[in-house]
Each structure stands twice: as C-alpha cells, then as structure tokens.
Image 1 (cartoon, rainbow, N blue to C red):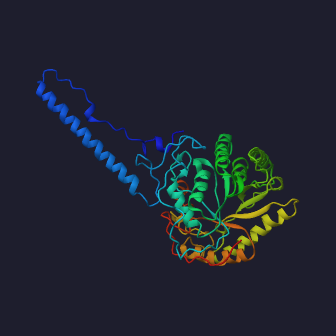
Image 2 (spheres, rainbow, N blue to C red):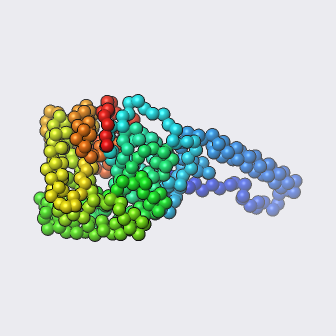
Image 3 (cartoon, rainbow, N blue to C red):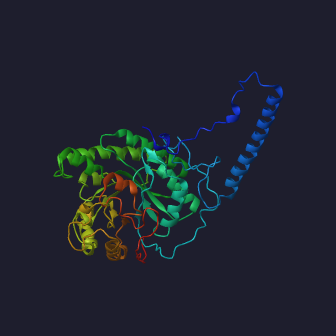
Length: 416
C-alpha cells in the first residue's frame, strides 16, 4: 500500500539547477561565452557557500531536542525494523539532552498506567517522529511508570523504547501486536517489527506483550452479530485463532531468549472466555462506564463492579490464574456530533471535562488504594479517531491534541 510519505506529503523535493543547462547558441560571440561562463562559476561558488552556511547553522543551532536530519528534513524513509517503507524511525538525530527537561507542578505521578496512542502512526500512514515520542515520554513519566501500546506497526515499539532510552525515565511498556480479523499479514508484519525491537533494545523496559486488542469482540460481532457472546460458537472460533497467535508469539520470545516474558491479550471486558483465559499470563480488559450507560458520578463504582464480576472472579477460578488488568477506563470530554453528547444516562452523563474530573476524583486514588491495576484512557485526544469514527472517539484524553493538560486537577496519590 502507498504510505503517506510517498503520496506527495513530505515527499523528497527534486532540486534542479538552472546552471546545468547546455549552451545551444553556437552563433554567440566568444567574449559573451566567456562572460557567461565566468558569471556561472561565480554564482555556483556563491550558492555553495550559502548552502553550506545554512546547513551548518541548522545542524549547529538546533539544540531544542527536535529531530533533525543532516539535510535539514525531519524523519526518514526507514525500511528496517518493521518500517515497511514508512517514515517512522527510531534512528532520527536529536540534539541536546532529552533527559534534562522541566517538570510541570500540575502533573502528578498518580496513575498505575496510561493508554498511549501515537498521533501519526496509523498504518500505512506512518509519520510519527522520535522528537514527538520523546516529548510524550517526558510528560508521561510525570504521570505514571507504565504505558500500554496497541500495536507494533510504524516502528511504535522502537520509537517508545528509544525515547525511554534517551530521556532516561522510569517507564515500563506493555508492547503489542494488533491482530486484524481475516488478515494474518498484519500479525506477521507487526511480529517482525516487535522481534526487531526486542533484538535491538532487549526487554528491560517491557512488562508484557499483548497479542490482540478487541480481536474477540471484532470477530464475534462480524460473524455472529451483536447478540453473539464469548461463550458462543463464534467465541470458540475466535479464541482458537487468537490462542494460535499467542502461542506463536511465545515461541518467538523463546527463540529470542525471553521465555518468561508475560504474554496476554486485550479485549472488551465481557469477551474473555475460559479458553482464552487459560492461554494468557494477563488479560487487559477494556471497561467503559460511558457505554453502560451511567453518569460520571456512578462510573467509578460501576467500573469496579464490572471488573470484579466479569474478570477477577472468573480468573480466580482457574489455576494458574491470569492477572487481570483494566486496560481502558475513563470519560470523554467532548463529542463531535450532537447524537453522542451524552452517555444515555441523562443529566450527569454529558461528555465534558467537568465529568472527566468527577471520574478521576472518584476512581484513581481508590483504585490505587485497593491495588486494582488499570490504564487510564487516555493520554491525549487523537484527531484520526475523530476523523474515522466521530462522536466521542477522539476525545478521551486528559490532554488535548496539542499535549496541553485540559482544565483538570489531577489526583495526588501513590500507585504500585
């Protein structure tokens, strides 16, 4: 498929010199030819000097931690490490010391974990820059010590691990392979990218490998409809397919010398069946009270009750028991259409910053105190989600799309 970088946006410019044209006027006098040649040589020398000064200045003065290539452009057309001809690369040059950055007193390291989605890494449009991910790690490290990813396309794993290395922050990562229904090539491509990242960076900053995100939900609803459950025939089929990829991922980790690295899966909270739970070391459960629907004031209690009944209790019946983790939970702050401005619960169910504040106040510190593992959903608003899905989908961030904290007071409490 054609990536964004090859479709005209950010493509390399063809630089042509007007001084390379052949002289075709044979009837011109010799002294005119001599003058033209001398003028041409003079201009070429001046042009070379100017270009040298500009490039030298850009390379020597860009000390703000941004990604800069030797030619002054941003990013590369890297095809290694699962790049697949896209422009997301962990090999970009960053000047300055990214480990030295100002701390924001408004940020509190109170979150067990945060779900992290890159702004510009939706395959095949892979344009995320290392400088952007470095900035994200600087901010996220002031909020949490662990993040979860959703896939390995666009060199996401490499970018995150390189950014952690550059910033020297205390951060663990649940890396991931996003499994697409009826598309094994997506799994194979991301597995290769993940393998390359582990070979390059090791696993010191990797807390687990997630195979699939809502694969069960997507497969079951595609073939069984909205009424089909995880225990239906379609649920059995889905878990069989997913378990094969989980086993395959484990085999890869064994080959790389990391047989004990935990491997799990992420799915909608009610789509874990017994067969799937038996095959994973951990389960990441997406639980959103917004879709229940509830009010913001009732969301924290609803989330905890759902998690205990649908994930913790079934897992405890198994031996060994997978560690169950809330993979997504939060409250949207906006809707791009009027139809989805409310959860459906009426007053108190609005998508708003004020209601996200209510959820944060009610959920975070109580979950920490109860030792309930969770990933807050999510770090920033994500424009491509709004463009692709509309409604509230792009507006779950605690930060806006420009990485500015919304009008929130973050909880201040310790987490594991």
